[in-house]
Length: 393
Image (tube, rainbow, N blue to C red; front, top):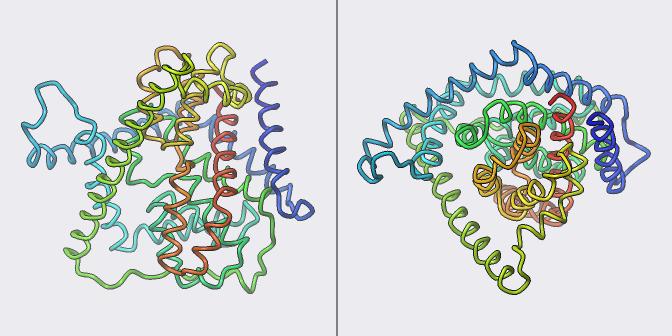
């Protein structure tokens, strides 16, 4: 029965993407089918095999060690602020982003990260039927972040037609950056974070290939990556340390605002309607939770977590999931955890449009116009990834 629901889920996702397609006659079905098979294969490999367990355990141990190193710096500066045995969210989850940002800067400085991004992007372009620029951008988004990635291709931003620009922005919204992966792993199981990172990469190509199909002329398929301004090693360290701290502060500020706002709205709805706002959203999103493979008895609560992620951000939704995870089966936890690992929410529209506008005002306005379509596609990517995972859980 689970397989039947998962197949229905795939059909629903593809149907919703097809409805929004800008050029249905130009959809390339062969690459889509290949990428679906690749997604299922990766999901099974990472979640159901000893090899996958070894890979995920290794990645988890690396991030655990990185978080330990980060804790030594945090303890030096903020030691004594928390009571014995307490673990404030800002100190344990957000501030380690600073250290991981530094590591990304080092790999960037020594040209290690750009090499891997170009190589993997080139390999993906052979599978997804898209251009080299689009493939590189998807990998780069997952490694350096949804706003920073546009800086690396700023030489081409102004020359891109709207359809290619949409694909670049969709990739940025469908993935998450490596700098905050460690933060996710402190809240949900690392195996689902790793699985989502890989599956979302292909899911972004699949949904974009349906919603926004086009063919790139080989003469126009040129990848020009902007080299960072030459800096000394310690200049680079200072820049990435500050960038990481800014991210931590921004996420913290957004959490304060969103969590407080959600609490207030919930309380207001309970007083007026005798039901919380999140419960109402849960009923709205329950059908999507069902086609993702969530058992019927758990779809309303799962739908509430999904809706919270969409209207606020993934951190708020993950905090909600941690609070109610005992109410869910392992299958539901896996499906919802994978759904949460992406930047698909309303605030990302402003972040991405602002990042592009900072580089090219005209193109930034173009992005703002198709902002809701971006969110629609990125949300379908999250649903698709969860459906794929439901096949193997």
